[in-house]
Length: 134
View 1 (cartoon, one colour):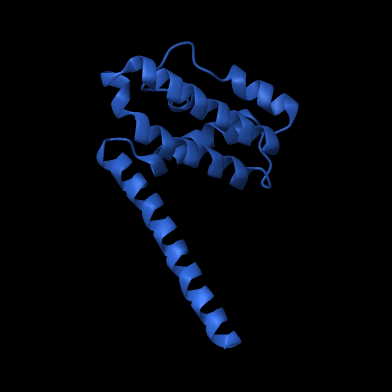
View 2 (tube, rainbow, N blue to C red; view 1 turned 90 degrees about the vertical axis):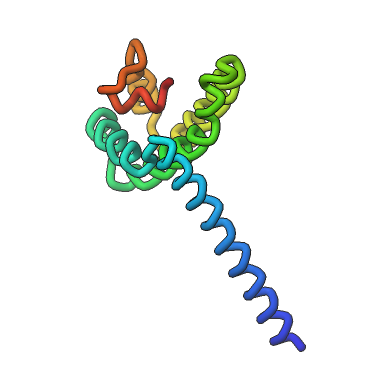
């Protein structure tokens, strides 16, 4: 009986894990189809942040995860940017606040200050960091 309960729990746990991956995969693919390539943007942003903030090899995976999660979430609200700019700004502000909070656990105070100073003056298609700040 105990083995059966453990087996059932394992099967249910694997089912939940596979569904969670499916949801993330769907969000990432939806973002890509909307012209917002999360993986490409994450790579470009990490290139800038790694050198700009002098990230250590220990910090890089945490920062990359936070940036990728942020971009996936941003992709879900992009449609409202044109239809309801005020709602977009509100949602984006919450997302950005969450990103800074996650980065605050991975970066030093000096690195976090430098991160904030990397914000471009205006949104620019040529500056990949615009995707984080606008």
